[in-house]
Image 1 (tube, one colour):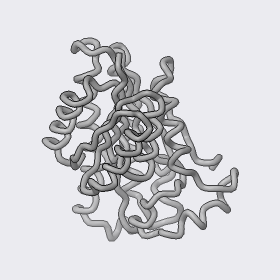
Image 2 (cartoon, rainbow, N blue to C red):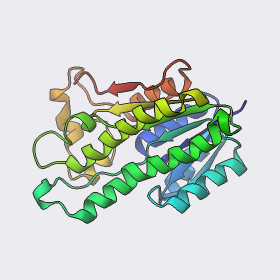
Image 3 (spheres, helix red, strand yellow):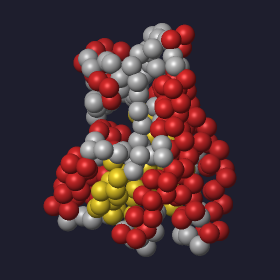
Length: 249
């Protein structure tokens, strides 16, 4: 059976590293992006230049119809999905709960929680042996923030941490729900990783400041997380696992 992976938020950071590494593992890769088509096309071009197969697929994961259309594009272009990586996510500026708007929290949950739920639904419909599929794997990108109350210190990212806590619950619950249908569900919980998400969250210097508190003495790279994702994607006797990739914090 051909291996087909969809990586949401696959055009940059952890998603791009995962897409590139998946191609080396023999996956045909669907690189999802929301707006930056140029970045997604670069990932696709790099995969194709190395002899792999990939497509760029636009979709805002917070919009159900766009997620459904994205999966249909993958069906028609690459074939039946065998692995979903729920990677797309957002963070916002540091903010205490006392100042947090409902609109901010709703947006956070729409992208970080509703999107992965809908994507998981579509993946299960394709992978489930009870629905004519051949099984498969879902790897959710959670965060160390899921069990740390958000970020370090007060007034940071409690809404982000809460959204990732929901991803942990999704992982644990869906594991039990679909194990008998040939689907494995696991999660990676990154610590501080050198990506642009810190700038969008109002802490552009975090990658430079964080190593002092990390036992391994450095922050992670997107490739560190990609390695964990691909391990879980391929580990046939592993489901319901949470792999903390945080340098020992």
